[in-house]
Length: 367
Image 1 (spheres, one colour):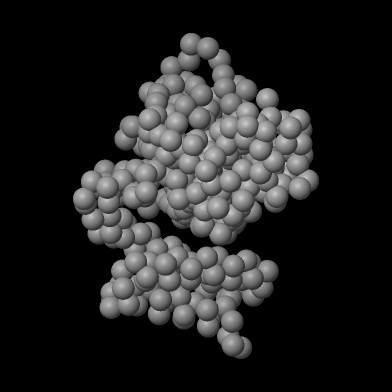
Image 2: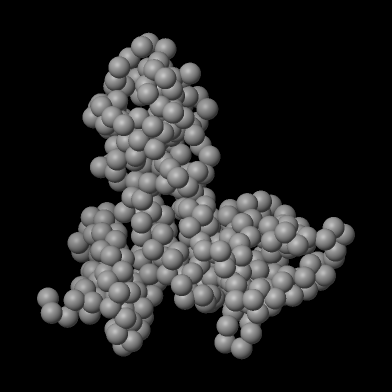
């Protein structure tokens, strides 16, 4: 509809998880680094969580797209299934499914396949999206897969992506054995206000518009962030709708009033945030449970970083230390943001900031 009018070769704001459109914001870059770190070390579960629409599936598809040929990959997207159906889905992804097999037979087929691939010098990876929907029994079956090994080598590695409820599920007592296997985790947060324009321009450039930076005004970007709160999927819905409206009115640029019109028409479907976040709109305090969870995750991530930095310092692996420096920068930003939300008197935040400072000195001993 609006492609020729605005100079696009294809729609720039599709809702499909297309890895070629991945925009590596500071959060997405850090999440990608965590994924690559977990895959490099080949041990334990890798867990990526984030709200609906933050780009977890796109990130997973980007990783899969860039794996080398010796990686044998199964990517499971439907998790509202029984354990038996889960095994069948994994077998189908590896193209070895034999119809009519029982769960035990499926499990044995997977074991044989993993061992055969290991013997051939290949690695097996299982990516499970929307993992928060897995039942406790399904989670236990996945944990049992991680027990498969040949000597000191794990035969299969599992990467889980899901909504925040996945981490809450892993905190349950019955999930303790599973949670202890999680060696790498990351929370993918929405874009910051100053990243929204770069995200939009990136997608427009990929779609073929070379002068994408002159289409949306600064007022439009401010509105887009306000109503989407930086969630990429909502940004896509807003921008696509605004281009339709702009084309209908033959507008050369998209201003704030167009964004307001799109939100007004679509808000009835509950797609966009109002001026206040939902928790505030209902008169409840958004800070206490959200910040407690944020601090818990931040503390665990810092513990992992401490161990990683020490390990690579001891081994003299300078390249990996340099990568960890970038991770520390992201964690430092998150700690600072949490400090602003809690206040400087919060002792937990002060303690975490102190640990970040120590980590900085560890990776930069000359500073």
